[in-house]
Image 1 (cartoon, rainbow, N blue to C red):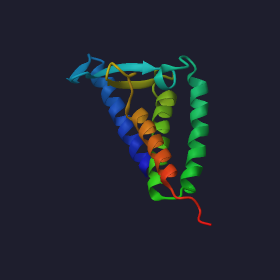
Image 2: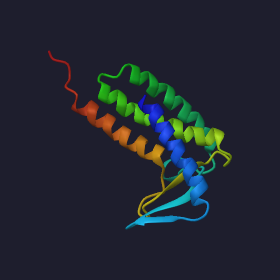
Image 3: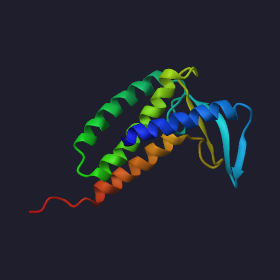
Image 4: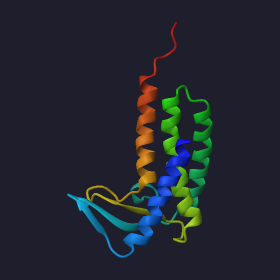
Length: 142
């Protein structure tokens, strides 16, 4: 359920960004701007031009994390993993279905950080939450 919500919000915001930001950027406040960019690489624009490899890795990641969700020790951990899966699926959908040669739509720009999107934010937040939830989980009693 969490993954479906993330994919929906991600794809809606990217569609809005492609249509609205193609006319020019929007300054929101301080250093936050909305700027249309396309990233054919992975996080932080690494591995530019390797979209097919990145897409294949994303498919494997989604399968592994979906299995992990089913075995998740708590609902909170499952939700956090759902954010990661939703983010991966949102970016994978861009690579497969948008006509930008395997590039992902990025549009949130702080200028001191690489431009990103909702899917990227959910991957980061979900990953951090998963680590914290698993780290805080008490071990087996003896």
